Image 1 (cartoon, rainbow, N blue to C red):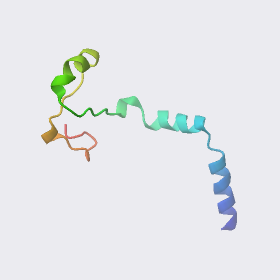
Image 2: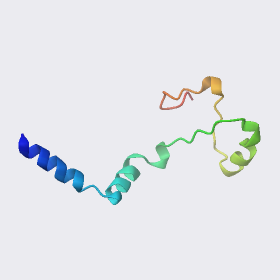
Image 3: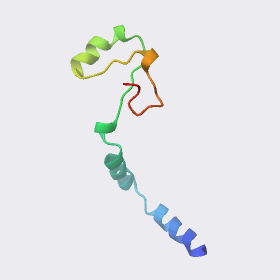
Length: 72
């Protein structure tokens, strides 16, 4: 219907940076986030472990970027 395009446009115009931020916080929480650091771990692993003792090291051969668990 023609009025649907107007309603859609109105909804899009109502989106603000604040509503985007709130949606991101609600759906992309840190408890579901992964940070992948790539490189020669000998150069950064000790310092990283010091700040994040619970970090998990996944060898490149085991890493599966297509998996929600990254291959753990």
